[in-house]
Length: 133
Image (tube, rainbow, N blue to C red):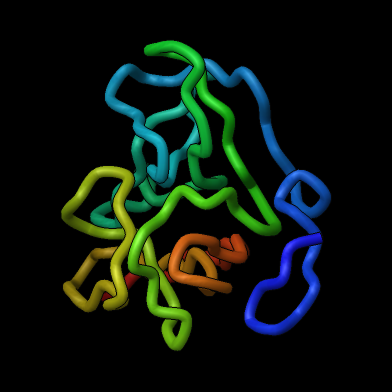
């Protein structure tokens, strides 16, 4: 097991859930937050309830339209520069993106994604969505 923040933690393959070989839109990228519609994964956005229903983060794309999605537990080292003192949220402006700032515009949706363990690994824990009024 790797040593992370002075603790022995299991590897991402030992913890969490992974959907392998999921059909996805060509615009989906590694690190994108995605939702499933009609059997296909699409980049999520916090600007609407329909596009904010994300299920996880893309960890790998084996082809233009096939991806692996982490829906819980520790991510692979797919990030850079995460701040382990903050929460991360689904972005309302960057398709599939994460942001440190919870959306605060009317009708945007707040979706907490998880907490970084290191600057490259996130503990994925997608929380219930809340629409801003």
